[in-house]
Length: 459
Image 1 (tube, rainbow, N blue to C red):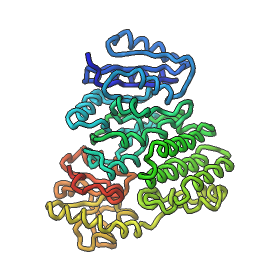
Image 2: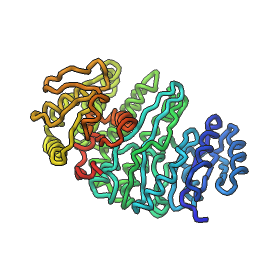
Image 3: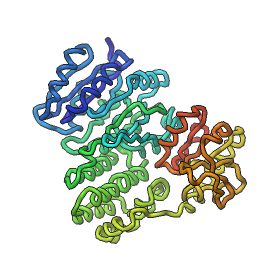
Image 4: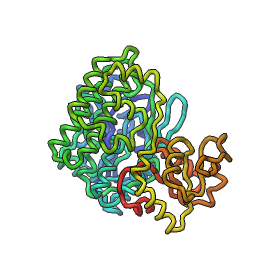
């Protein structure tokens, strides 16, 4: 039987979760799959669970045992080299997937001729049971990967999961993970869309990401957090060696400085009882050395959170100042007027497109960003309604004259929802889809920042 999808699962200290993960894999509705389990010298009883499932599914499961721990990246690389499927899907042993994930992603790849397919994920917080829908982009990135679509795809979070990718792309271009370090995915995943010719996007959470208190990203006072910086350096050097850096300098500098370095500086404060000032200084020096023009980067002021914008402005002063500010002023605000004035033409093109199509528009978000967007872009009241998740705001009239409504009371009278803050886009999309699937929900931040054809957002 020809293998369509190879599922690669690195396993280390996940015996508490492994059965749930493997149940979701062996019950996939797509039959032509292989499941490659790589035991990364795990000291727990994961081996017993692996062998139990292998005996019960000899036609699907292959077990590989490593004598030395090479961390998640090294284990995934072993799986890539052992895989025989046309496509590869990565799953972590403490997570699980929808039983039809492989079928939906593979069908999209075949039917649309794509060599990269991505979907959304649902973050599930183990301790509280809270769920958060993670969606950064919609079907606008589907189709032939133009330069602008590649820019958007590069800038997405670097999760290797939620991506079905052609095995030949990984093998032919040596797109292997960094080994023997944590945060290994950050060093390679942003390169995927630069080698893919066509991408498909499924607006559905098919991957369930288990957020554990003892996970790598949550541990306190552990120096492995510094390895995020190492991964960032590997990515930047790889982009240069592979000839991508000059063409996508703005995107890679943004990823390096904000997504990796400033995020790392935040970790130095959040995850250490005694902040490592010298390490913070080293990170700051690397930002200035490798991305000297980061303050003028196109994306810094467009899709960065206010906290990171403030960190960028304080970075040159020194880590002590940065640390003191971070402790005292975590809820930094930002004036978005300049951003909306710079993107005014793009916003007007969007509103005019909706007007020509006869679409009724609502803006979701009556906070600072929503108010600024309306003030700069909607003097003619093209946007009919403003929605806010805070029930106490219902019925209020904004300074722009727009009335705040509840979603349920106006959902039948609208066609398009613009989400003003990308942080809440996934959760808003999920909430809307539960009640009214016909509505088009758009991430306004991303739409204004990336110059993808507006029509692509309305597929």
